[in-house]
Length: 243
Image 1 (cartoon, one colour):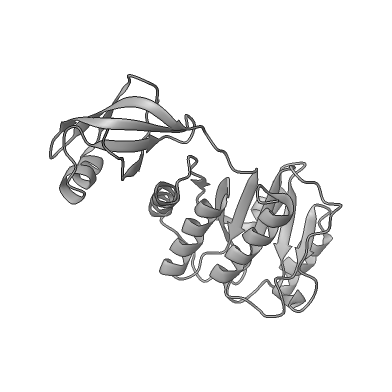
Image 2: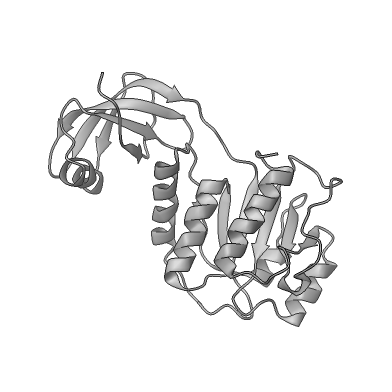
């Protein structure tokens, strides 16, 4: 039995004996870039059915067909954690999305704050980065990347019961631990601010919200992309599936 060296996300049901058609981009990647051919093995996942081993049944320049053989891993869903962040420079925004997918975010929401430098994003490109990150890290779940929305509007429609870990750069040097009386297993979200920080108005509003918990991320003010990784590590270790 050939060893599968490639993982591929597909938008198709997966089960033993099923066939999975490949679109042009997938066929180009598998057969043109990775030089796979008939009989070669590929690992597939679709975000809901776990990971499955399949073999190439048909290989072409514009398409192909994979035959699903057996499940290699059960579905592993992340905790109910959202990551909210203000978009920054393109490559660093890509980094935040990739690391959020790797570290177990269930949903990724770019938000526009008063000091956000970017007023638009390419949601489809960021979603592709989330898929690629899941393919590379062995995950079976791909978080949704939402379109950019204003922070104040998101807070106004905040879902009942979801807690918010508000990473406040003004608290640098203060306590950076989540207290033990916070609910483990409950829906949560992490909010990372823009490069210019939160405005006084935003900070006052966030501090006054009953579901928001202001947290410091160590003794130094971190760059936004570093803060996202640090915050997710802190939350996962205290309340997530690393605990």
